[in-house]
Structure formats: structure tokens, C-alpha cells
Image (tube, rainbow, N blue to C red; front, side, top):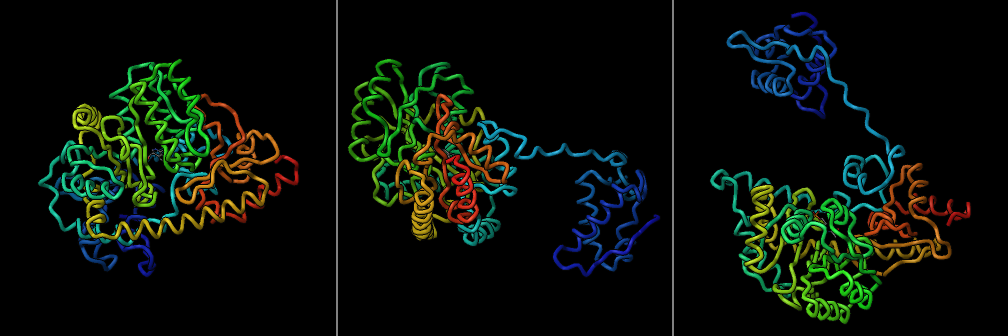
Length: 475
Ligand SMILES: Cc1ncc(COP(=O)(O)O)c(C=O)c1O
């Protein structure tokens, strides 16, 4: 073989295998080693680079897995022909070329998460999640034999569902394991419920403003969205009754606690009115309580007040532990859950037992409550700093939550189209979620959703940007 090069084996922050793979891949894509070139045998190569045969075998396996080389029976490894013409990746669209709309929010926001300064996102900085605890649990789970589980259980891992019953009891929610269906986050819970229960085209009550991705999903399913205006203490009850009489909906999907995007929560008297009204008109409530674990223990919920016959309850660990574990769950009466599990199995079979075991271990170890308490204090500080910052810059807040991820704010004395502000911000590499995204009717307005943690961390950048808008007389 020609062109065997000298490898820098003293490079310390990558493994030997990684360095070999990088150097060999380069030689192949640069065509220093053209298609069908025979590679040295594992033993020869090990001697050449003074490394073990295991290292070379591992490197060859990775190159073969990447399709760069292939093994021919008994004759050794060869450079694969398809790599004589490497495929150029499509150029990535830049933020400035794309409008920040519902589509962008669902398809690009995660890809572009590290490239821009996000002030409105729906996640926490990585070190706000209990990374060490999760790493430890994963190491322990690696020692367990999960091959016996096959696809896992349709309703989700039973020991986790049993543990969740005591977790829910902290919030005065009384459920048995067969009242719980584990899902891939609250997103799939919402999809399972809406796909199972709604008839095409029917009127559905939703929060206005409300959770943008769920509104998109209902639009996709061609539902008629009936937005109930939200105030800082919950829905407008008079409007709600008027719209119920007019539209005759059967379901009300709401995110009543630490609401996305406003951060507001239902007041107790409003919660009571919502329950009375929905009972009167025989409307089932889907209580999306995705951030419920951030509420103080013993906080009431609609389900704790009215029970499982009137309310379907959704929770998730994505806002507190780790979004990419993708564990959420539905709490509902058993009869209904049987329908929901059928849809879950039809569309995705089971959920991921490995993630479910991680959550179980964390709950069992008893550290979750401490993590939540610590997180709650940090969020409270972020809320106070963000509220102070925004009000000092002449913005008004929709509500004054003390925990959760969001505040909703707008310039106080001027009617500004927040979509236009978002466009201006984009040119500075700043990403905002403007109020139109959260409107069931896509109504332009002047609100912006702020993630309090990222606002606190990026306060100097935000202050500079908003002050410059002030000076230009835009806000
Ligand atoms: C109100 C609401 N519901 C559901 C979800 C989806 O959550 P998950 O990450 O658990 O799928 C979110 C995520 O931000 C949300 O804000």
C-alpha cells in the first residue's frame, strides 16, 4: 500500500482508535487510497503504528461501519468504491434566511440550538439537569440484563408506574398503576389523546395563547381551534361559556399551571369555575401539566380536585430531569386508558424501557425531591432577575410567576409587532419566540416569550439589544 503516513500518536484528547479512523478516512476521501486499494492486514498495521491488533480491528470495524472500507472473504480489507465520489452535505440554512414560524420551531430550533443566543427556548442549560446522577444511574443500568424485556410493556415499565403512584400522591393525585400510560414525553401523550378522542374537524377548546407545537399538531389534524383567552389567573370564564355554547366542544386541552407561554397559573377560584363549567356542559379536560413537578408539593391540580372521570392528566420528566430521556405519562381512568394504549401500540408499539428504568432509579434513590427543590430556588432567582431586567427596560409582564421556565412580556407603552422585533433580533444572532406562534388564530401581537434562565444568563446581550431598540424609538 502506498502513502502510509506518519500518525501523531501523542495527541491526547482523542483515543488511538479515533485518530486512526480520522487519518484513514481522510486518506480515503482525499483519494490517496483509491477505491479497491487493499489495506494492510490488521497485524501489519498494528506493527506499523506500534499499537495493539485490538486497536486496529476496532478502527477497521468503524471504517467498515461508515461504509469507507469493506472486508472480502479471507483476503482482507479494501477501500469501498462508493467513496471515490463523496456526497456533499446540503448547505445548512442560516437563521437569517428562515422565518421564525411554527415550522422553524419544530424542525430547526434543536439543530440550531448552539449556534444562536436563544432567549425563548423550552429547555435548560445542560448543567441545570442532574447530569452526574443520570450518568451514575446509566452505569448501574448497564449492569442489568434488559434483554429479557423484549419490546417492554404496552403501558410502560410496571415498576415505574408503581413508583409514579407514590410520586403523584405528593400532589394529592390518587392513581393505581393501571391508571398510568407511559409515553415519549408529554408531546406523545398529547398526540395519543388527541388522535384517539377527537373527530376530524371538530371544535376543540385550547388556551389562547397556548403551547405552539400542540396548536400546530391540532391544525395538522384539521381541528377547529377555539381559543379561550387567558389572563394572569387563567381562562376568561365568561368568554369560555360563550364559546362553549357557540361551538359545542367535547374537550378542553389546557396547560393550566406554569403555562406555556405566559408562565401564569390558574387561581384556585378560577380552577373551581373551570371545573363547574366543564362539568355543566359535559366537557372533558385534558390537563397538560408538563411542568407540574416544578410546582410546590401539595399544589392542587384539576385532576386532584375533580378526579379521573372529568380530567385526563399529563406529566413529564423532560422539564426537570432530561428532555432527551423522553419520558412522560398520562393519568386517566382505566377504561379510557385501554383506548389510548391501543393507539400508542398502533403508532409506536412500546415506549423506551431503558429511559423508564433511568427515571425509576432516580425516583427510588430519593434524590429527585432534592433536585427539584434546588432547581426551584434557581428558577426563582432567574425569575426575579428577568422580571427586574425587563421592567427596568420598560417592558410589562403578563404575569409574575415565581417558578417554571417562562415569562411573557411586551414593551409597555408601544404597540410593537413582536414578529418584527424577532426579525430584527435574528440579524444579531438572537432568537425570540414571538406571540403570533402561540395564538390559535395566528394573530399578530406584541408579546414575546422569555425563558428566564437563558434571559438571566444572557442579560448583558439582551440589555444591549433592547436598549438599542429603545434608542431607535422602536420600543
Ligand atoms: C405545554 C407543553 N406541553 C407539552 C410539551 C412537550 O413536552 P415533552 O418534552 O415532555 O414532550 C411542552 C414542551 O415544552 C410544553 O411546554
